[in-house]
Image (cartoon, rainbow over all chains, first blue to last red; front, top):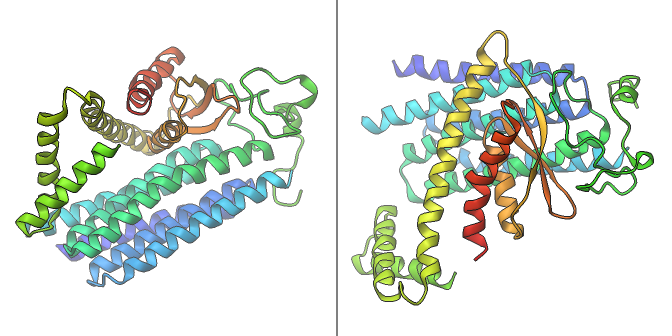
Length: 86
Length: 141
Length: 157
């Protein structure tokens, strides 16, 4: 029962990842790709948290913190670049 | 046992909201609609997953860490959305055809990037929709 | 503000005296400290005792709004023909304080369906992108009555 649930959870996250990746490839504008990348990093964080719970490894949560910080900085840097380049 | 059911339910809802964010990202017709469906569905999904982790480990230090990430996400996601939205508006990303009204049109100064409540004179406005149509919609500008 | 710190100090004192620092004990200590402060000070410093219930009310309103709008967004995204009526709306800003404005913009963005785009340089107007604009006056009223008035009472005496 729990195994089936875990498969469902990971499958939902993977499907989200695939959709975000399609948007990353299709664009059509650069900001669209930036927000697709942002969503991908949040989904990666979701994966890490799910794995931390599944395999009882609380240390993985530190990775999630770093990923959240870095993805925010990356998005802000991209926004700066987009506004200046016009 | 009850705790475990709660953890699984929270994880399932969190994963579901992240899945919805992915679908919204794919199906929504313009950048602003995509942002409004992902910025929070993603945040809510991540928040629910982290809450599940906090309950699952049941340790005070770990729970604090998980709550810290939730607060951090809730503070930074809107800031990132605001910055990307503003930059995209200057960059000339068009709104969807079905958009009913756009109160922002004609209120940004193109020279200083300032936003003003009163309407801006014609010569200092950003290029409007008709002009944007002729532009190439991709990286190589 | 200093009363709030004093209240937290009372909560910590309660936890130290009972010797257990679980979150439940801290909450109970805070509630107990609040009661004591109210008994002693509610005549001299009435503002603080209005603020805590207001904060609680705002938090509950925000949570309910997030749940309701998330449900609506889920239905919209999953239905085969998405019903969208997007618009960028100028909402009058009655708040003066910067903190309150940031909180308002953040809360609006975290509510699915609305996205705060920018605040004008003269601090008069907030531009909000919404996914479902049913009626523009109704939308403005929801933002002003639901969020701005509460935030104004909380941050601007």
